[in-house]
Length: 417
Image (cartoon, rainbow, N blue to C red; front, side):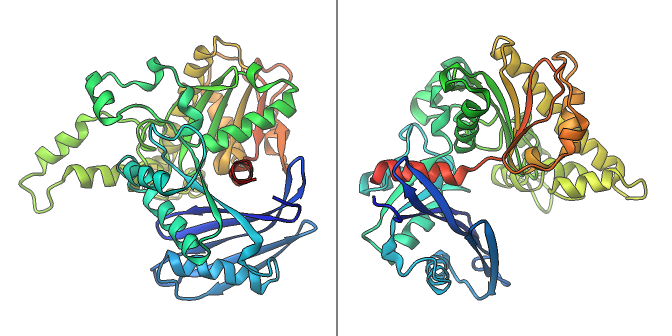
């Protein structure tokens, strides 16, 4: 790669494509972001593309409502917009495209260039992530068709967790299930955890292999990770992202017999439940939304909790209590996993970075670690990271803005340079 070469980072969902365009500015290497945006509501009425052009830290936002029938058209539209706003002259300026893949299974423990063999293995992994990997593959094909010469790289959320010890990644089920069907705890949000670990090397002035930390990646999807000596040691998500914490619409950990119970008790009803319908409800209609019956967005649930006149006020308060309590329980467990030698507790992602009230509520649920937040710093605005605990807190507590896209960009650069 040469200075000014560009890397496009793609995160494709079932009805959306998020994108960021980076430019190499020196050989360290360092990159600057030139543009970012979102194609949303693909194959749904009201589809549009939002493009933000970034120059000298100034952001100019453009929105265009247009019928977007599929990912192929969405990809074409992204390139057209980047050309129209003169961010690139043509697609040939892009030398590599990095794709976020949620699940790599056991075959992908590091990022990889996507070739025929890798693509075949990725198709095999769809069974492990049927909601996430197919859209990512659609995104890959959409951009590949536009310019077959460009190299593509897959960066996996699961690969960071390949260091989990067997006692952490195995379920207490027949061992043959692991041997024959790859049933194990994989963990997710690994790209974010990698970024936070790198940021902590700067903040704590310690090499990664010396850092013990607990990171709470709290967004609509949420997980916690214990990082021991710079490696993932335990994490709350499992075979799929449904395990662990209560999330926006996901239940988190439940009694697995619920599936069978619901199927049996409703089998003679007009709408009998099935394994598929129960799993779908646990993914899409549970969590904060299911408990509160208000919203999957934490801001709406907090607002309802704080409004004594809201008809769902008590349920909203219950949802917040359950959400924060489960996070606190994982933090306590992971402090034990780290031999109570924790260099930092980190909050990141949408809720973790921005919801001061939720951070405080989580800390309030932790009775045994002597943690104390500084109220002013917890509420303060920040651009990168901020220490938000009092000096008397046993463990320093930080809020850090994650950046998964730059990690994908660096991995793409490393593999194609």
